[in-house]
Length: 106
Image (cartoon, rainbow, N blue to C red; front, side, top):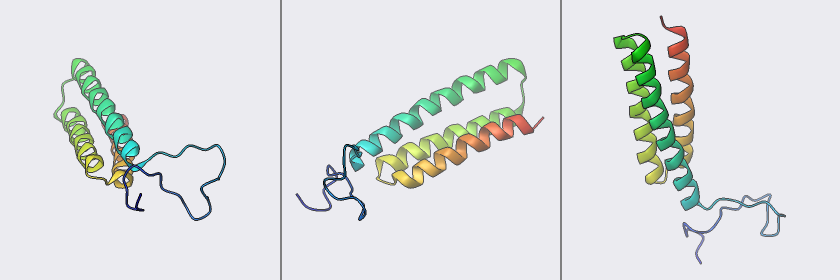
């Protein structure tokens, strides 16, 4: 197979083909994992939005969780197009900023 085959695991220079018992994800598996993770977080943000709206109705709450849900959708598209590292960082920043904004903002 060629070195650009999406089904082959990526090997770092420090690790050879006999690097031990560690199992690395192929790029296709990494993309599928990030799509699944972003989908779960998208549903979690929707549930959290519904809970927050039941407690207090605020445009700010809708904005924060709405933006987080949109960013989860962007992460899904980035992962589908092969930008998994960028999608991972964006997902982490999105989740932390949404929870931080909900906690800090009145």
